[in-house]
Length: 532
Image 1: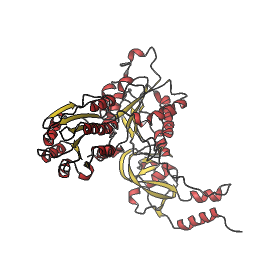
Image 2: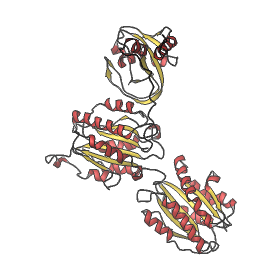
Image 3: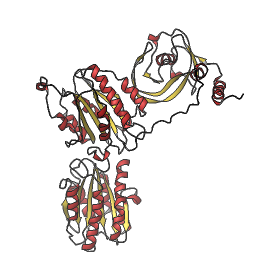
Image 4: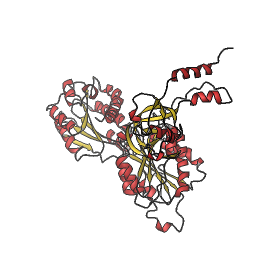
């Protein structure tokens, strides 16, 4: 009778693992072990109160190996053998109490490890009633690629919500995370607890797999204190959304604020600051104050004042923390509607684009219309609004004319109408003077957001373009030089930002401009992402 596959697999495991474990002491730390996946043996009767352990499930390498093994349940205080898996360092190790060992939280460490039973697989085969089946490891979840957002969830941890409702709140956000389908290529979630003193529980890059995230949420302690949501919002803006802590370039940033009742402090100023830095503020209100409590409410309209935009999209209401299942899906759907994230800084809603338009006699009225169509196509790709991207236009010959500045047209329709309504001037070509005019008149005083100048010309400039273009770039303005017909390549190269081949464009005919509108749009987004 032949040996079936699972038994062969177990025998292979036995042979590969058949060596004596290395004895270690109770105080041996993960960082003291040189091997990649060593087999070690802990002594009996380690005094648990003496063991320094940092983390839960994944432990900082400064932790006692035996302490971590007892904490995780791999061995008991009687000792035993176990396997160690070395892991990369991380930010924010969670503390917890388990199996008599109190592990401590730790903000950051350079390396980690996890602990595993040496015999778990073999005992499962020989002592279970059913034969061991071949196991196939599930690949880790990459997340929902249609919902690429970075979310800071600000949980209400105040005495107002109380410990029981706090647990219900954690259950709700766990279900929300599962519905969002968190993963490396999908949504990333971090947690801040709003209480007397705001505390970041973990950052965006700490847990990108659903099971790890759910465990971290479950382990969050209730902190109590006043409902200082404004302080928590300011704390989040100042320290949470940074690249070191997991923020991804070009991804919408969301602050999802849960408020049980009402905030104890002012939320408006902090939320305004959040919006100005490109954070989309959502407010979820639960269990509105009773009639007796209404007199204590500082600002009844705090939610509408705090959110990214008071259009109903950024507010959400639940009557209580009980029976919340029906609210999970609609809230998750809102958070994934990235096209409505008006406050988040992306290339489409956070740039100022100035158009410098050659109105010289050589262009002609018909070709000038083609230029305006080209510029309209570029502008149409961006989210133009009072809190989004803005466009401005200057026409030049020997003189310059401010057609409209960045404060004139604060909606896309108005901006497109403004571009199409520009009237052809006719005259000479002084491109250098026009660049200087744009620097001083359009971009000074400096506006928030990244600055771009798109120059369209069809001929040789009568003045120097090199020095003004260098001045523009020193002022933080990325220059695209678009030449048509007789525009000299050396002028285009001199005006364009580095790398020249990406920022200098030439076409022989005005009718050929249209094919380059998306080239410039994609170029602006690439410059935005790369920090040009």
